[in-house]
Length: 318
Image 1 (cartoon, rainbow, N blue to C red):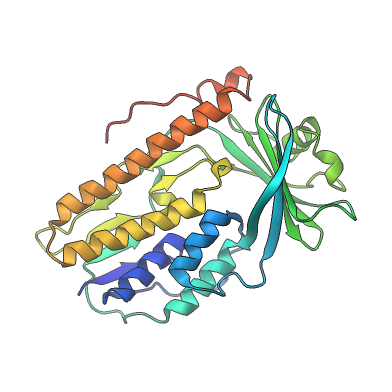
Image 2: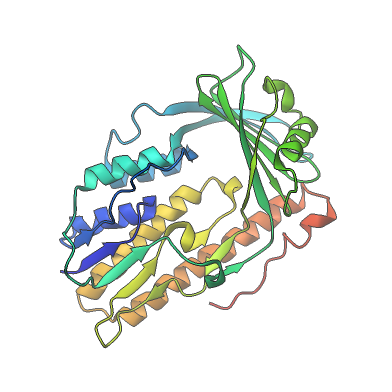
């Protein structure tokens, strides 16, 4: 069976390793980092939680913060509050728990048949848009609802509040381009969206990170005739979705599932080049569907002209 080098500790990479091990393949993990990465809050909806449970079994999310409802004020639509079970998870802790369940893997020394990685240079992607996600943490007002996530819009973009437990809250906003002063812009958008009264004060600091959807140009390369192993890019390195969709983690896990299927089928004799082409085509289809969904959802809510370029759905060739 195949030996697979897992290049990192992303959720998609580790899930791929788990599935391959279950099918009799061997995997090799990278050394654990000397210093753990900082917290990475993830809001996981019910379909994502069900997918994680089916892949990893019970107990993986023990002790994480549970949400029960979502409050939505989207454009001119009526305001809604509805049940929506979800959990807030630190992605760094989740990856550590996954890695612990995997065990040590295969020792170094043998050349792998495949490498699975989330790492990919920016030049390897087709990116659609320039939008950025602003994010900072703040304190909820005492006595506030810590079990309800809140989403609202302004002319410039959407704003989201995710309670983290113990009175803490993650504030996020999506804007159609780079922000010179992320904290000031985030505070202004929270005020315009009517969400500022939920907090004691706006976040004192905030970061702005690129968030435009993007697709890897060549996410799957078959093994070379000379013996060089194949390569499969998974997770956000393969396909990055708009964070509003709520499907980012699930989409990342699905790339790991599909990558494991490619490696398993290649080991069984299916031509690797055809499998890699199928992998790339599946990602391309998912990307185009995501772009169309974003365009339909955003066009009715964001009148600011800066959003027009962000709403375009280019005809990308597979």
